[in-house]
Image (cartoon, rainbow over the protein chains, first blue to last red):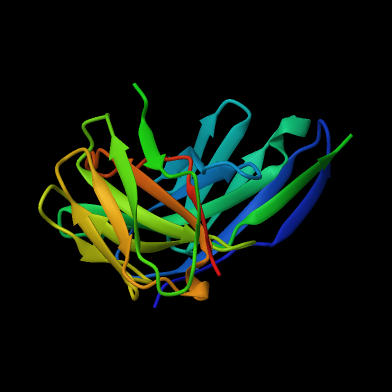
Length: 112
Length: 114
């Protein structure tokens, strides 16, 4: 079966740095994605790692270690608007298509 | 471009009723997906369609059927609704560029089954 583990909640202060970890056990692993979801909203794509290493997109960075089945999302210079749920998702290759398996999400609360 | 659209936004059903959730995308994407999200949980894949004319089961397909009407539209049908199907339903699509899979989500349908 497929499983992903991430912390359920994280609290941080505005302007700080926070790291959200994700470990996975899957077969057919193709890559690791991160999605952000504000309360009442739809998930939106943040980043994708297919290879080991760090990917940086503005204030957000994502890291993947395939050998450790581990990744993380790093959020820098936290802003109040970053309060949301963050989901890691494993991309699985299925014949000619791909599908995502999502973790349960990490709720990030940014305090002033 | 509207992206991914879903109708209706809200729906209340009685146990045993049927309904169809509609989804359309205008991004010329090949693959489309239906997820459900229960409170405080991640998204679970119900069904997906890699291309027009094909559909496959995801993690939680029981109680649902789907139709990929054309490249743009992918509908989800509940034949006999049950309270356990109370959830938020999201449709998503992706272009499926090789080695990359950014999914674009619709705004969701909030379904309550009494």
